[in-house]
Length: 177
Image (cartoon, rainbow, N blue to C red; front, side):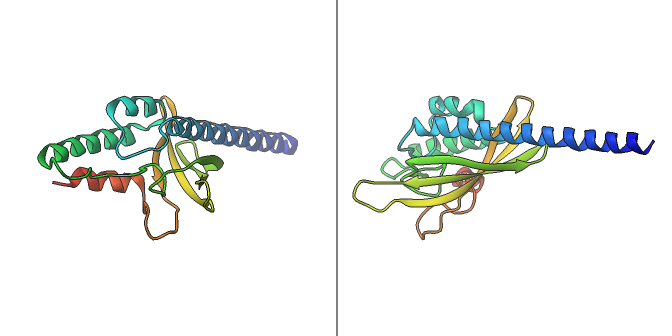
């Protein structure tokens, strides 16, 4: 009887570890897909257009997709009302650095069956200058369609750059009158 209980416990732990590994692999795949699309827009600037958002769509959570759509609508309203003003959001929206990243490496992912996060090592390199390196964190949720990017926490430590989270920046943009 004792052997049976031990065998059941070992099987449960092994199954749990296998599920965790599958979740981590799914998170990493979603994050890598998102950043693969990001790399096609180098340099990234402001709120993505509807056509550009469509390219990101397979990797975005419904909540993040809605925030981007609503922020795009706010940007359009602002541009119509303020013909000679710069856009509400300028520069790279998806990383800490205004200029964006020239190198991206998705690192370790962790979480549970419903949500998780991955560290992302980023670098901005410009000819003749020392590269800038930092780590952002991408947050993911597990949807019916699989793992999707739900938010980005900006990790850059310099004075001028994105701070907080992508979702906060988008909500601030949406609330602008």
